Image (cartoon, rainbow over all chains, first blue to last red; front, side, top):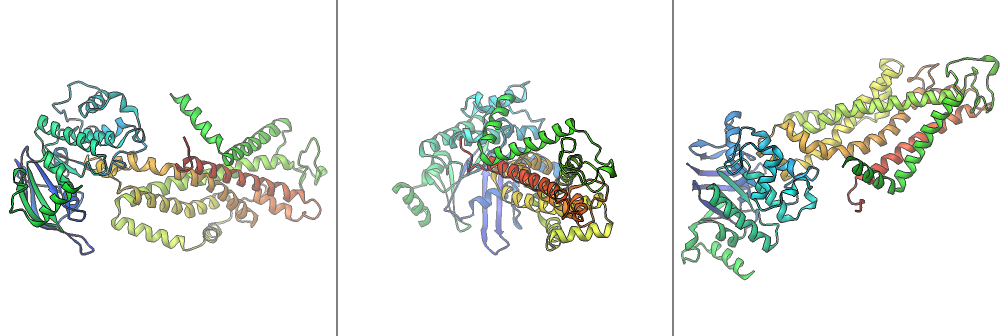
Length: 255
Length: 282
């Protein structure tokens, strides 16, 4: 039961090669970090995994089945088990909708879903309240609008929405990039707790190697769409690290 | 909750001087016509040749026309007709244009490209000329004028809505909606429609004024309302012959058109200011 990517390449119509021969395996329950600077292909990889981008070269399987199946029923099942958290906290929630409406959208589409961390027999609003409490927000917030929330609170809401279907794989595309340092730590702690509690697989994409080091056991380094390095977090200072990895570590420590 | 919200919206709307003037003018026009209609009820179609081309009096507030009909009653009747028809035409244009704009913008691809080329083709003609051509071909009556206006105006709504959707659909909450397996219809209804509604309301409010002008212009040149229907443009046309003797026959319908178009433009601008977050404080 794992995510396997073999020889994945992605070329945009304008001729930009976003990913080149990416191969990696993410076992169930593991948290894998993907680091790289802007334009290294991290977000493209995330979008491909969610089926938001197409790809022509390579094979991606999740739990033995090819991802993003054409068949609508299988796609529905796939989307239930794979969710995503986005980078931009300002646009992650619809500004015209109260929090509870955004929060309950996935559960509304999967009425049969009954995540183990939610009590049985709850009404819609009670589910929304409980989800907010799981991510450390007050349940009274459900009727608020996004502009009444801070960046960190919005990101917590989007995490609550992403885990509401109890996905087995959570793709996080720079979820802490637009937040203050203290809030970044809180969000990372929350993700770590949730991962421990639910044993979901996390693919954590970031340009910040420190955030990845905090959360993930294994790190993959991307540069210009190519996987240049892969290591366990304990080997981060090993002398055999790729020069680009060393540069990323140096940049992070000099901040 | 709802009364508080209504109070809040009314307060914010009335704070804007443009909106205030527009509302004042609308209340004045509606109040004047309702009150006038109650005080001096005349049949706008009743011909009285003994009483033709009379000046303003207590009985006939704005005098009588060349056939002795009460001008005030005709203007009031014309108001209901012209405003009603233009609102109806805009509504139909919105009902056709907005869903097309929403779906083509969101789905994209070949359908979008095909529809937008049609839109470009139609937009390359000036809408007034195109509407004249359509109304001219179908025959001179109000129904055909409305049809011509709808055919010309739905395109504008489709195009504007499509543009708004193109900007909005790349935002992350729309992507999240896709990732959560919401249907296309649900994503559009839940996320995209609420984003375009304010712009549509503003556009429609300003458009009502434009369409009133169009209907009047068509009636004036003889391809819209036909006598004896008291449409304002048709009244202008009928009064033309008597302009040197009784200029008020043209002045009053002209003034009515001017005031109602001004009112629509003020209300439209006021709504635009209301929905414009940059101008909204607090």
